[in-house]
Every structure is written in C-alpha cells, then in structure tokens.
Length: 355
Image (cartoon, rainbow, N blue to C red; front, top):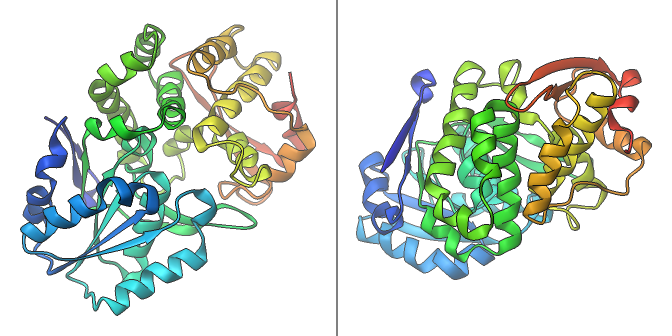
C-alpha cells in the first residue's frame, strides 16, 4: 500500500495505491464519509464491468446508493449530460452531507467532479479511477470540467476530492489502446520531470512490463504531479508544466471531433511536434524529440498528424490556458528539464510547423 498526501491546506487529501484495494473500497469510503446517500457517476462501459459491485460494496457499508450512467467517451462530456447528472442528484434528494463517487476514467472524473463542485454549491466526492490515464493524471489535482463545441474543458472548476483510491488491478479490463493512451501521460511525466524515470520507461519492452510495473509507475507519476500541484493549485504558474503536449494535443482532439485520437494520443503528437520545433528554434537539444518519439512509437502511439500549422493555430486560439493574446508553451530543452515560454499568438506559427 502506497499513500500520498496532497497538501492543499483545508482541501488536502490522501491518494491510496494498492493492488487489491478494490475489494475494500467500500470500507475505505465509509471511513472518509458519514454520508447517507452516495451517487455513483460512471459511464456505460465501466458500469457493465463494476457498477453492480460498487453498489453492493457501498450498500454493505450503509450508504443508500444510486448509479447514474451516461454513454462513454469525450463526446458525452457535455453540458447536456452534466445537467442530466445534477438533476438526477436533485431527484435522489441528496443534501450537502451526501457524496458523489466517480468511478471510471478521465471523462467520468471530470464530469462527476464538476457535478460535485456545482450541486448545492459543492458536495464531497471520491475518485476511483479505472484507467491508467485517470490513475496517474486526471484524478489528481482537482481540475473538473465539461466541454463546449468551441473547445475542451471550457466550463469547469478547481475542486479537490475527499480521497482517491487506485487499484492497478482494475487495468486488467482496460483495452490495450487505452493502456497506451495513459502511457503517453506517463512518458510526459518523465520527459519534463525526471530523466531517471524516463530512462526507466525506456527499459520497458512491452505491455506486460507496463502491467507488471504499474504500481510503481503510478506512484512515481503521482509524486511528480502532486509536487507541482501543491505549489500551484490553480494553474497560474508552476502547474503549467503539466500541460506539456496539451496545447497542440487539445487542438488535435477537437479538430477530429474527439473521435480519431484519444487524449493521450493527442498529447503524444503535441509533445513531438513542439519539441521538434523547439530544437529547430534552438530551444532544445538535438535528439530530444526523437527520444520521446521512439518511446511513444514503441507502444503504438501516433507521433504525427496531417494537420496544417494554420489549423493548429486556429484550434489553439480556443485553448482555455491562453491569457489575452498570449499563451504559455511548455518546452522540454532536454529530457527531465522544462521551461515555460510565454508568447503572443503572432509568434505561435514557428512552434507548430510540421516536420
């Protein structure tokens, strides 16, 4: 059992990581909450795998449980689905002392967390992430949101969970594409945060090695991310480093209507294109992009996309991270290092050129 305390003052919480933790998750949630009612928010894919089990575990601990299920995928992380979820909470008769349980991947965590942040101006929620991406990234840090047609995560909040429970054994049911999807974010952590960790990832030969090392990989990624979040909870300074690959990646996801590329695939594409251009502009050591590209490609992740620089700039113009006519890019000058470069949109084109 690994425990990581995320120190955020009154919003501090603990992340627990252990194989087999799922068996005891009902008891663990009861220790954190005296709620009468628990609303489990999940998608149809996860509900088919774990919905009945989580309801039984929570009911056994005295919670009155309802499962609120929506269709899986980023295309359903919308205001319409959000409205359906908060109305379901109201019809369930939930009060401020009750609890939302987010069971699923990043989309579920984002949506359920925003429901918890908004309903009755804020009720407690628990994260039980079931994908590698959500276990190492989206369940940590308190960013909750839904998308608009104009862009990703444009309506949301910073709202921390009461607790996060991570069982790497839940990855056994994860389709291989989504294992790789999460591994792109793992690579990101090493690329900007730890040369030693990146080298350890380079030693992994295949998917079986990822599964075998999952607990230590998750633990290391969360340590890296939690240290950043503790310094900058609201994403105004140091936390921006976590956006490496995301500025281009989000534009790629949206351009293809969240259907062709997963989030991690978009991030991988973004890391490679930005770093290739950083090398050309003298901001990164030669060969840095190739190291990232080689590791992504080993696990079947795309490293390029047939999008023009003009299309990328138009997509980035909708990015929630921009400030006026400026945006901050995360550059990796060499593996394990990073710098934040604030530029105007007039200066963006050289950073998104195709190779």
